[in-house]
Each structure stands twice: as structure tokens, then as C-alpha cells.
Image 1 (cartoon, rainbow, N blue to C red):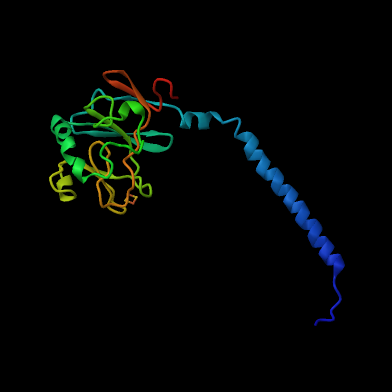
Image 2 (image 1 turned 30 degrees about the horizontal axis):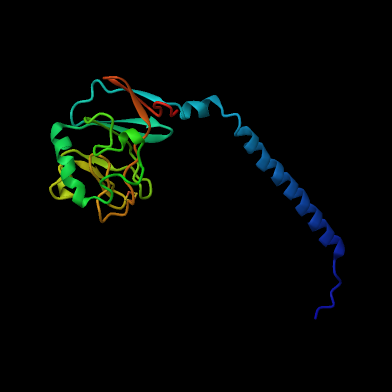
Length: 196
Ligand code: FES
């Protein structure tokens, strides 16, 4: 057993210093919380809906826009792609999109409002990489499927309705964002009837 005298003066100092740091920490936490009630104009703009001109998107083409810091794809599907989609069901994890990864109005076999336009958040549902669009060579990934999206990070595969194939790490279909058509050539991403 040690006979060293207990330094009560030093212990008191440490206790006092800890209390002060604790108090400063409480203030630092409170400031961002209050700020969160007053988002900056930049933050508001980052969350704002995005209007997209789709009038020049060719059949088979994909365009990419940014919404809330995420890539959003607009793909114009060809008739051949649309006709092929129902033949994939037996190879998919959630062919009917039971796991609600889309708004109600996109809960249908094509996961879209208009058959020819597929709109999705271009982020893999595994760990967040952005899959690659393979318009013609997807058959190398899934036999008998012409077009789709392949995630280069761990090999997840999605069809042209963003539905995930079986046997890959991604657990869910791609997310369909809220969106609304203004006219035949314009769609707004991030807003729909009743959802802002
Ligand atoms: S992040 Fe896409 S497969 Fe892992």
C-alpha cells in the first residue's frame, strides 16, 4: 500500500476544470441545434425541386441531374426495353416493389408515371456507389437481359425499372424520387401533388 499523500488540491482543480469544459460543450451543442431552425438560403436551394428539360432525350439515352446532393437519372426507355421488363420477374428479388422504394403513383410494373421515362435516384441500395448504365451490354451480367445498371463496387445489378436482381448484395430496388410532369417535355424532381 502506498504511503504517498493524497494531493487533494490537484484533484479539486481537475474536478473544476472538467466542469468548465462540460459547460462549454453544452453551449457548443446548443448553437447548431438553434441554427437548424433557420436554414440558410444555400441549404434551402440544396433541397429545392429541380426542373428538368427532357424534350431532347433520345430513346435509350440517360441524363443525370443533381437533387439534394444525389444523382438522379432520367432514362428514356425504348419500346423493346419496356416490352422486355415483364420477362425479368423470376430473376428479381422484389419484382412487384413490395418494399416501398417509390411513391404510390410509381408502384406499378414499370415503376414510373410514363412508360417511356424511368426516373430514379442513381445510388446503389447496398453501400451507396452509383451504378453504371449499360444500355446494350447488360447481357454479360444477366443472361437474356439487354439493358440495366451494374454497380462496380460489389456487383449489384438492377433492371431498367431499377429492380434488383437476385444473388447480389443490394437488398432493395433503387429509389424513385417524388416527381411530377409539367408538360410533355418537362419534369420536376423533388415535388409532386402534395409532396414538396
Ligand atoms: S455499393 Fe453497389 S454493390 Fe455495393
